[in-house]
Amino acid sequence: MMMSSLPDARQVRLIYTDGTERTVCCTAVEVPFPEGRLIVSRTDLNGIITHANDAFVEMSGYEREALIGAPQHILRHPDMPKAAFQDLWATVMRGEKWHGYVKNLRKDGSYYWVYASVVPNVRSGVIAGYTSVRRKPSRTRVAEAAARYEELVKQEAASV
Amino acid sequence: MTFNFLIAPDFAPERFAGWHMLNTALQKRSGMDLHLLTPTSAAEQAAFLANDKADLVYANPFDAAHMMRTLGYVPFARPAQRSDEMVIACAAGSAVQRVEDLKPGCRIALTDNKDIKLIGLRLLEPADIAETEVQWVIVESYQAAARLAIKQEVDAAFFLADSFASLSRMTRSQIRPLVESAIGDISHVLLAHPRVASSLPSIRAALLALQADAAGQSVLDALGMSDGFEPLSQEEAEFMIDLMDTLLD
Image (cartoon, rainbow over all chains, first blue to last red):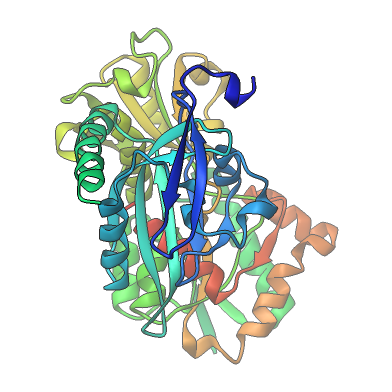
């Protein structure tokens, strides 16, 4: 099915913190997290993807070649508040681990929820990059996060 | 000089002879004297490490993190095509159909293996069950865990995937997997203490070449590692440790 044929498909203009912009299409179709698996990726210090495991590639809907070298925010869903990612980056740049529930956007406009953990890769005392691991989330926690994020997104829109 | 070769205590009992065969093969092929240490518990392994008795270690991935980052051990190889996975299973006739059907207060049997417990806890998260909300039943063997599950004296049991696969056909017919991990990036590793540095190249070469001849292959088969061992770089091991760090909480 073509995404544009879905009645609930919407287009959203996203502006990222690095100043780049793109229009994304998103639908109300949720893709279930694959049982027993972990979605793993690594980025450099600038959030550019340097490694993606098979589960990451499959769930993103992109080809591996399109992911490696792309910014991690290629997965960013417009329902996610900017504040969540600001907190993520502030935390890992301090050398600490970050956890949170994240709604990710697939290439075809559908989405999937994860519980994400990001750790700095400390080598010889210096942060050399970041490893992000996503696992299957609790639906109770997802519902709580979705409500919180909806409120934050509204606040962010109102403050523009 | 004799080096001690410590094997993590979580290997399957039926592989005991295989580890002795590997030790003998490595001695012959590297020209080094190796003495096998096979602690039977995590506490016994910790005592060997505390007394600085381990020169070479076949370590489980969670212990490897401590050994590398705190004790300075150097990674050099890992089993090829063989990641550490686990299975959560229940009685075949249980009303539990998926992990989400398990509830806080449930009883889960497992062996004293913190890796399995940690990965299992992550797989329980979709059921909103925290570690403190489970009645843990620690047993001596994975066969004992299976028996408790079959008799429904526990709601589920945790197994190392290899151990689950090695259960008898009769036992497996009476239990049903709820979920099996497919992480792929976590495995046991071979580590060397820095004092082994000058001898490590010959030991490493002997280990990595086992697949090259029939005698070496038979050793690998006895270990249940027919695909042999592959080199492991410091960065590859660091990546694995970073990944495991994300699973700790």
